[in-house]
Structures are given as C-alpha cells and as structure tokens.
Image 1 (spheres, rainbow, N blue to C red):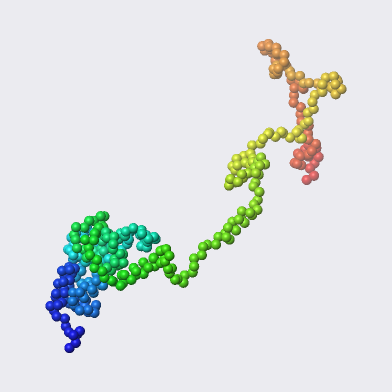
Image 2 (cartoon, rainbow, N blue to C red; image 1 turned 60 degrees about the horizontal axis):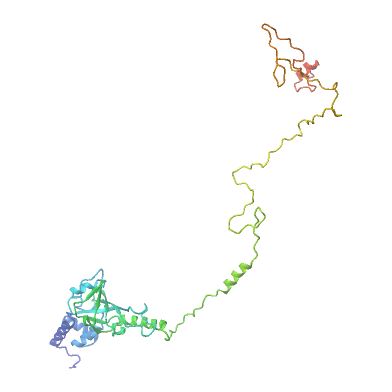
Length: 357
C-alpha cells in the first residue's frame, strides 16, 4: 500500500489542532483541518497547516470568526481600536493596507536618507477592521504587504483617536503571502517607483509623447489685432477727442427724451401783414404838413371821461336836461357792399330787379 495514500492517524491530527489552538487561538475541527490540507496539498501536521493558513485570506479561515469580535456596519467595517481590549489574546490579524507616513502619497522616497519609516497599517480580524501605527524603525515595508499575518500578544495597548500604537513587544509578524492581495500592491508600488524616483528606469509605453501647446499662432493673432486700424475716437462738443472710457458719446446740446426744447430767445411778431407806421416828422421840417392840411382831431365832449390833462367838468344844476346828440356823436352807417351776396332773393330785393330763376 502506498504511504502517500495512507490515512493520517487521528491522534496526529488532534495534536496539530491543539498546537494551532495554543499558538494562534484558532478553533479548527478535524474535518476543517482535512479540507485545509486537501486544498493546500499538504498533510495534517501543525507546521503544514500553519503554512497553508498563512497563505490564505483570513476571511476564509475556519474558526477565525469565533474570537474576532462583532462586525461593524458591514462585513469588515471600520471600528475603533479600543474594541481590541475586549478580544482574547493571542489575536490573529491580517494587513489590509500599509502606508509610510514619512513619505509622499505614492510611497516612494524622492531622496535617500529621508529618516526612519513610520508605518500606518489597516488590520482586520476577519470581522472588524481598525487602524494601528507600528512603532518599529527597523521593519522593512515589504514585510508588511497586504495579506501578511500579525499576531497581537499584549493587551496593554495605547489608543489615540481610535488608532492603536503598537510597539515591537505588542505584536509578532508571522508573514504569509496572499497572491490576490499582494500582487496588485507590488505592481502599483513598482510603477510609482519607476515614475517618480530619480535615475530610475522609465516604463516603456506606447502612449504618444507629451508635447506642450503651441502658442505661437495665438501670439501672432494677438499682435495682428493690436496693429489693426481702428476708427478715430468721436469728438466732443469742444472739438477735442472724447476719452475712451467705454461710455457712449452724445452730442452736446442734444435734448433728453421726454423734455421740451426751450428757445434761447423770443421770436418777434411778423410785421409784413400789419400797417407800417412811420416815425412822426419833426416840427419845422419839410415833411411836416401845413396847418390847413392837418387832420382835425375829434374833441371829446366835456364830462365824457377825464383823461390826463383834460379840464374838469362843471357841476350840472339840478333838473337840467342833457344836451341833444349831434350828428358827430352818432355812429356812421355801414355802406352796402358792392359784391352781391350768395342769396339771389336778397340780391333781387336790394336791386329791385326780378329774380331770373
């Protein structure tokens, strides 16, 4: 019978499980141990089972959820590091993310000798996740790749703002490689190193070479716009060019909308249609008419009106009658018009002739 196909003794498997329980505080049943050995292609010894467990994602390790605490808002939800105080020791954890806070965001040092590293890691127990700072200056960052297993051994841990400060005596790095977690992290780190480090080999890429924007044509167009002819600025009311202030130039004296124009002077009445009065000739001149040719002035009867310089009227005795009116006091009658009116009957009565109609 082949030795490789022989069944493993039950006592050997039980001793291996007890060793794993004592060292890592994991409760694994014999059936689970057989399944782990079958997947890893190893026997059920303690050393072989530990090697398979280190290279397995902690979320799929059987028995890790028994002492991993209560999950947060979701599976793998972030919690405060103070919850670690209630969990048993030793406690198996796995690195999810690691960052050297003394280096730039990409994690690549720009110069050599930049100081001692300080790692901020995100750990998970398979149920809860928390942040921690590893106060170990000699530990290389490659030993803390995602998927690496850490074993917390001490309880007296200092917490600051929900972050655990872990000294070298608080934990033990067990190692392990989880390919689906470490490979993307290692590739990204290599890309950052080749892109940002000084004197490093550049990445061969088929992408076109970067070329700066050609601004010569834009500059030429701007210069031509400055040299182009512009219309002369409009002149103001005084004849001087108006300043280019951006405001609209209006003509001086132009009335505003809604207001009437007031004339600067008063218009004189037209004298063409009215009678022309000549100045009175002086006495003694040749143009003065003789006394017999002078037109007699109408004298105002006494008592009619008191003009300036008129003699005062005499008081009339009581019972006196007014003087009779003369022909000069009566109004002259209007002469009949020579032009016949439009009414034929009136024309016939006025002329004494019969109406032809």
